[in-house]
Image (cartoon, rainbow, N blue to C red):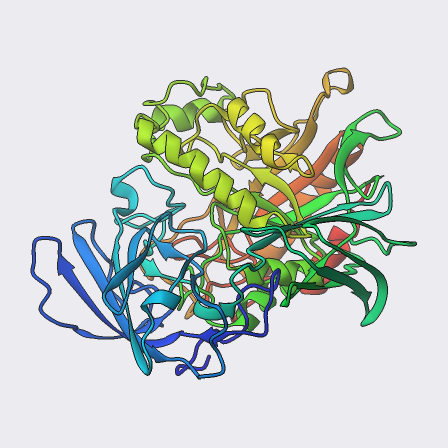
Amino acid sequence: MDKEKPLPEYPRPQLERDSYINLNGLWDYAIYNKEQKFEGYQGKILVPFSPESVLSGVNKVLQPDEVLYYKTTFTLPKDFVKDEVILHFGAVDYHSKVFVNGELVAENKGGYFPFSANIKNVLKDGENELFVKVVDPSDTSYQSKGKQKLKRGNIFYTPQSGIWQTVWLESVKTNYIKSLKILPDIDNNVVSIKLLSDEEFKDVKINILLDGKNIASANGRKNEFIIQIEDPKLWSPETPFLYQLEIDADGDKVKSYFGMRKFSMARDDSGFLRCYLNNKPYFHNGLLDQGYWSDGLYTPPSDEAMIYDIELTKKMGFNMLRKHIKVEPLRWYYHCDRLGVLVWQDFVNGGTYAHNLIISGMSLFGIKIKDDKYSLLGRGDLEGREEYYVDAFRTIETLYNVVSLAVWVPFNESWGQFDALKSVEFIKQYDTSRLIDHASGWHDQGGGDFDSKHIYFRPVRYAPKKEKNDRIYALTEFGGYSIKIENHVFNLKKSFGYKKYKDLKSFENAIIKLYEKEIIPLIPRGLSATVYTQISDVEDEINGLVTYDRKVVKLDIDKMRKVNEKLKL
């Protein structure tokens, strides 16, 4: 990691311009109680790492009654400024106000989504000051928070606050491409491309390339195009072909990419409903991925750190990652697209934690709670339920063009679940190209595309009856086998795991046996997707296949791959 300029790579590969200034680096910071008067900065923080992380240089948890202040300065090259200058934040947790040269330019609520502001009118010649003010109630309020908890421990982790993704500038024309919506259609060999802008463009030119060679073009005075792709190369984890996209819209030049692929469900020859990829049955064989790093927490220390996890997943023979109640930086999804790993994307859970023993116990005995009991499930706040839909929309809009994203997961277990059937309909308003696991694990409401089970404390034996198989059967969490690796643990005193082992050989044998004896035999009986818990240790959790610091892989990669070769349809 370059401590002067961490994470320098272009942060938005899905819509790339040649205009780019990265503002990551050492900023001034201060943390004061909300009642205190600001009395100056207290030190330096390495942006984009949250103050709770080691890499930030602060290593302090922001409390709900505190305010986090940031300041930096920047000077723009004279040849940088076009018509407008856009300031981008990849993500800031949770409620932020952004000022440039003393003027409020942006205010954002929601800790997982990009936002931006046009700052052209407040810029000065020479040095400009950027000031950011952040508050974060963490788990004391209803907002989306994932596994963040002020009193971390067991399955809950250190909270995150403030800037945790790249901050950057770009210069654009007055009417520019704000986003793209790309939808491949392999049944008709076409791709639909929609340019979103304030005004319709007068002259648009589009080139589609494969391996650097132009294979299709279109032009016109419009913002929507349907382009024929002759003899398309289909995207899959085994063949992750990506088409490059070059667009010139009235002089606004951008690059993007897409894959020709289709996610669907259908019955196979034996009569079971299955996940289909490109009109063929395809087994989704995945790992749970919390998206935490030992030194950066929510923020990967480098691009290579993200790539390592994805490549390790593939080397072990898995073809999918379930991104667990977190939205990653856009480069993570880009690497899944180009390397070939399916993504199941959880929406980030909100509400208050309602994990009491009664609810947990009911789930163990297969008792399902009707999810209109808002207070019981930690969703008593109307404001929180309304904000869920705002965040759901932002999740879909942010990740719509991700090639590898196969499944939306709006709710996990009882964590802030409410009205899951309505959530399915909400998602379908904006995206019908992916499958939906409406309630992963516990409180199934009978909707969505999956009969989704979490099984930890008992043998995996459940299989659907063919005549009642009206949804895809998926084992969306299981395993969680654990072993503590000395000198590679976060908490020396406490650890969490569902089944603990004392030596690596026993750990490896147990996982292989679990797959050979319990998982693989269920595939011909209807099992179509699995998610093993989990890719890496996280804080107290020692149930990863690799340690939290990513230094020790706990099993033989080749042996795991050979087992996974049997998980096919």
